[in-house]
Length: 492
Image (cartoon, rainbow, N blue to C red; front, side, top):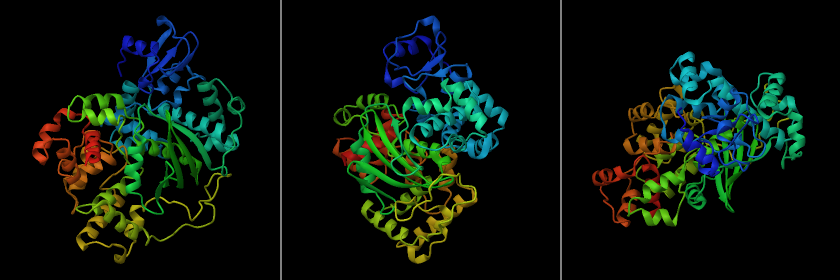
């Protein structure tokens, strides 16, 4: 990735928080790398290098600044826009695919050879897939060191390291400190509830219109899966190694997240999915500037800056919701989904799995749980579906396609290919496929012009309200039509 030195240096000199995560500042005279907004004295030009990723800075032999903590910056917003192989790879790495399946697994998911994938990532990010995953492991390890009482060996394997020696060497290289020193320096912060509970801050680029996010999630909340209470969103999670629960509370400059995990190896994917759900890596200033250029939307942007697109923690869940919500109200769809979930079969056992990392808690019944998985969904009896037979079979067809791999709903999916696969299934039309592209696949440029609420919102703002005319008019909102969709829903 080409980084313009003058533009980057101006951002550093002005300590502009909007560029945190876009790039990293390496200071050769001190051997550290920082966020652009680091409060330290601006380094001299001749001592500065700019890097497209923390992994690239680490590869140049620099350690993370202890003052601004660049490894905890928001992710680059370009991954919201880019749907190419590098963008897909970055989303999958954040979701922990390399830790679970290695580089061969990542390359297979993307349909490229390992060598070519390494070449593409190195050219764009300044580091290959292993180095990018290693930087993420270091950040995960630091969180666990500072927020839990787990032993260092347990943290090493929970963070995805292959050995304690690799864990020690990496943290010394990245933070210039031994793991035990990191815990001593920050103070030993005991978890509130057991060793599997982690509290951390999820950074974002301001502004963030938190109430709009919570309103959207609250009206669609499913009992036993999620709830909004006292300004906090609670939900259950289905994660690669087990179940989890999260409480997300928007605050000034960050979202406070309290995670309770069955298996701490799921920390990185849980964080990535929570960030994706709340769209925390977006660039709201750029989005709002484009939408506010339209006089019809300008008053709404001024009144409610920082509107985000509520995305998802589970693509299959959003797909099921979308199909059930076809041509019915949100309230009716919620009732149907609640009845469907009441038929779920509890297959969990109380024994600890043989491969569970020592020191981690059992999953506890009675709390919030993740949505049904595709295989679990297929085991539901006909009586669980309070809907026409055709829609029930559409749902089962989707679940079968997910199970056999013919449809992929993962965050790193090829968006165009996924939409084409969905449209090939019975009962899924353009509205459903585009709704999934917006919420499950993170496409920032989807306008649901045939949606009744979108058309009502357009009419309320004095905009064209037929699908064809609205599509033509909305070209001026590109590449942020998904955000315009949310604003039109709110206007309705």
